[in-house]
Image (cartoon, rainbow, N blue to C red; front, top):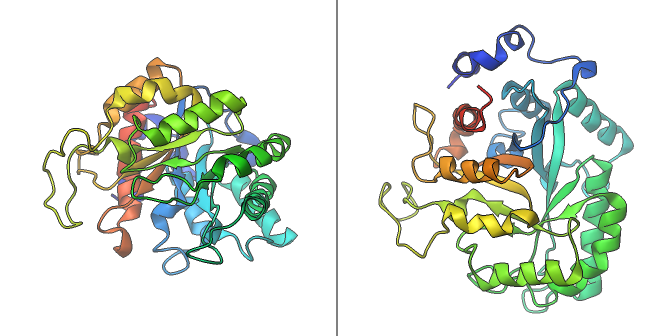
Length: 325
């Protein structure tokens, strides 16, 4: 799907927008409540600095179009020049691009790299805390209010390292001071009904961490039909119990501050055939969930430039499901 085709598909919302894709900073849209659209630049990482620049990706995000609010953004640490200490000049350029292209920094993707120094001796609590706080400060400097705080794991169900409670608790005052929410990602094969989630929720309630520690749910947990590749044929129903049902999300919504709107297939009529987006978004709307759905494309053609068309198709679908058309 080209930019022209994308704009034509969403013409009802972008009639005046097509003539000038970059709006004046003074005309920034006020944020509306409810679920909102965004994009993770992770979708385009195979193209970044190969076929396009970081500013090209800002322009691409701007083309996803919304007059109702600024499009949301997630980036990973790899886009930050001289991470973790970018120059003031680079940071100014970052904020200038956010204003120019009407992009709202939402979630900063980072890691507590427990195996930074050793595969057998993970970071201790103090080292983990220092690494975490370093990235929270950078997230704040770049204007993000959420951090996708990926924790080290110890098994195939993505159970976090044993000392996660200690260093997260130490960082809570810093997160509050910086206005950055720490959000470990709930990613397949972890289920929404699992010990991993039970442990997170128990900690959130016991330590009264809301909103400074919560969760990010990846839509991949809802995938119920196989995708082409990865050693299996596409289009086959998955075994019940290997994926989460949309209704499993409801009791977790108070703790979810961002979603990764994961997808790996989009049809030509702008539908996602293996993740029940319509059911999940209906739940978000019914329960007045307020936050961003950040597109994260992991299709087979991602390495050959396919992300651009796929993300545009997904946003046609999201605009329809969110009632923006």
